[in-house]
Amino acid sequence: MPTAVILEETDASVKHHNAKLVQVPRPVPKANEALIKIDAVALNHRELWIIENNYPKIEFGSVLGSDSVGRIVELNGESSRLQVGDRVLIMPSHGWVSNPRGPEAEGNYAIRGGSKAQGVFAQYSVNDQADVFKAPAHLTDVEAAGLSLSGLTAYRAVFTKGQVTKGQNVLVTGIGGGVALFALQYAAAAGANVYVTSSSDSKIERALQYGAAGGVNYRQDNWDEELLKLTNGQKFDVVIDSANGPGTVTILSKVLGLGGVFVSFGQTAGSFELGRIYFVRHIEIRGTTMGSRAEYEKMLEFVEEHQIRPVVGDVFEGIENVPEAIQHLRDAKHFGKVVVTVQHEA
Image 1: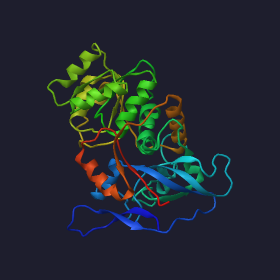
Image 2: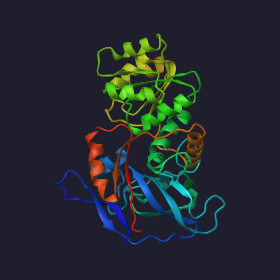
Image 3: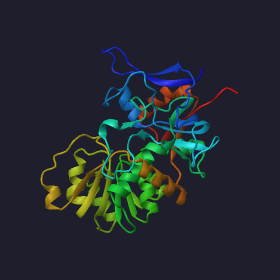
Image 4: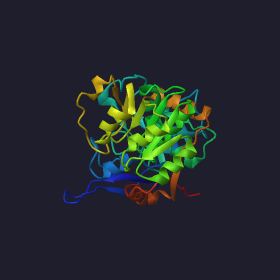
């Protein structure tokens, strides 16, 4: 039988839950569903948070994983977009069609993996045809596997929320993770002047290869002053951030320009004291996460038009190595996506 990786609950005394390999029946597509043979999957920090019991609405026994690439092996019902043999991506969430403000009905929305929306860390996955899209032709399987969740989150952050346009100064904080790297590539492709921050000088150097105009290490003293030296004193129009934390006050008060937009898609560094900076300086703080099916389709078109390639850091072979790949993600030594290829018996 095919293999899948599920979320297994552990004893309350154990800090982490398990990513457990199990044998499962090959799924059968219902009406208007597609059966997909998975060729590669990619990890996100979300899997790590789920296993560490630091994520809401998890469901034990469900298949983990949001990102994959595969090929259609069966369609139940006719489709004008898809056919058997197509190389495809699966929308990384379910239940959000096109509303630009957020899911049409919050109770019906779920991100795939470890939730009521079954994940894709499996040899086979069955999904609604409406959530299945052809993969950009210029990408390899390993690259395509790492596109969906991070690529969608970044697209919404940069364009729907940040409204980034040509010539703007854009700051992407914490470069090295999947979403930040996509945000860098998207904003640069749109013609913006993109700068980055990181605690790693080597990650800043690598970011230059993907379109960054420059960057600074936020651990150095007066990093904000050094950053503005790179722009000849010009402050930023848009900041794309996943950290929050104390450094946000410096960004809002010293780095972001008057009336600038601060887009937040995470809180890895904790909270911060907002005070009155935002209204005194006319700053807009816009929260975001994931994106709609309509934005996902636009993201795929943008990636193909600009021939953007996901940055892949490390590749593990075999679905049985998903737990090892999760540990690698926990060590935080990667730059770009962590991908696992999926083998099948002949």
